[in-house]
Length: 493
Length: 115
Image (cartoon, rainbow over all chains, first blue to last red; front, side, top):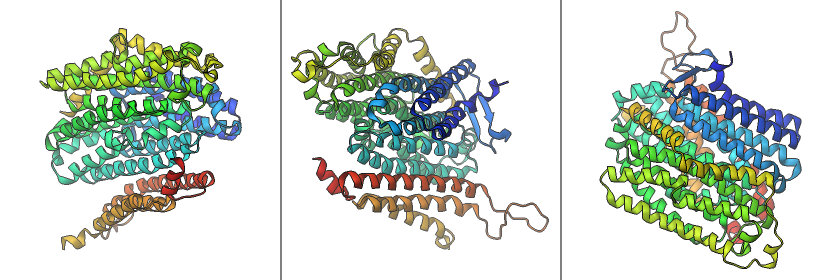
């Protein structure tokens, strides 16, 4: 009886949990409810993933208004993959945040933290599951507005400025997106993405449609922090509470990548995107710039959270690089890296949160010799770093392998060389951590440190473990990604 | 005549660019939010203007009227207005907190304190 309603329950459960928390106003209760909502979302996502595994498409007519008139929720193999990713990361982070957030957010604001957490989750899941362009914008704003609040809850006063900057840039991005959707609506008379995809070929070469493509590209790229549009990201990640950074790094940018994929391959179709406009060349160039410039900037950071934030900008470059190939292998590499980077960066930021709990702001000069005092945490960070580099037996290797394959397949051997070369920059900043953590004598302040609490280590190590496990067993991730890639490429032509 | 018949688009574009310019050019955090609001408002016009047909009425089916305006853009923009208000409220709340923390709402003075 409940099975046909799974697509909508995916969003409604966290959405309903949020006002309930505000009414009860208890931090502990709010955490329980947020955990319950996240676990339920994970269960639903897994059920949906199983039901679309054979290539079926689930369509849910909101309020029984048949699409394209009503809002349609549409689950296929592409977004089911994303739903599992977002809800599983959210579940891990919410378990972690009980200890971590209690230390970083004032007690009387805890219930508000979890309210925003549930709203953010509802927004992210909504973006992924909806099949309606305007509904997507609304969910984008729900997740963004709650994200601004979550960032502003950071202890440092710079969190306020970071949140304000993100609010300005995020709103510009979302407004660009809605301008693009408006132009498409004017040209096709529909907001349903599947319906729009059918009607667009008749007007594909007209100027408003190309303008819409440009507006949507810029708007979404602001949200996913593609290289020159990434300016909001380092400060937002650096000063937000640890749990929020992990959630954002692992899910928010990834969901925006999904929106880009959905519009490029499903709505516009590869012909409009890659032939009428030089999107492949633009994406390729910006991705390379991200990979090299952001990695180089990361090497010179003193704050570890900022360093890994710049590293995120670089890693997003790898994902968009995969998209720019416009081939099954390239897209597989992009989608699998989206999944793999979410695991790796989620793990890294969760572990850094443990260090932050002990030392405050995590800088290179106050973690000297931490490998001896917090061995479990430090070893986890090293494993995560290895995965960022792309060492075999970690997830990072799998995705880079596919990206290199895609580069060779398209005949651009120099690109394969550049992918490997940019990994060397990653080695440089990961080595800085190894050097500080293991090759320095602990100074008196560090020598008094204890290992991070178990309630934070276990969720973090779940993600570290996953990023090693999926580096060895790629059936689920690469299988899911290549099916998603094939569906995306078939959808557009 | 083409210019005159498309005048709503010209207004939209003017508001859009003016709003975006204010966001970029001004260092005062409140003025930035004003610009952001103007920028968002231009989108309301972009959606609503094409929904209106000259001589069209509300979509209530009677024999007297043949031409109806499309109500959907209005409904969409009601939602967008709510989003805009929420963004503005949150932005202003952040500015209040920033002023409490830094004693200023000028961007350059705030950045100076962080160096």
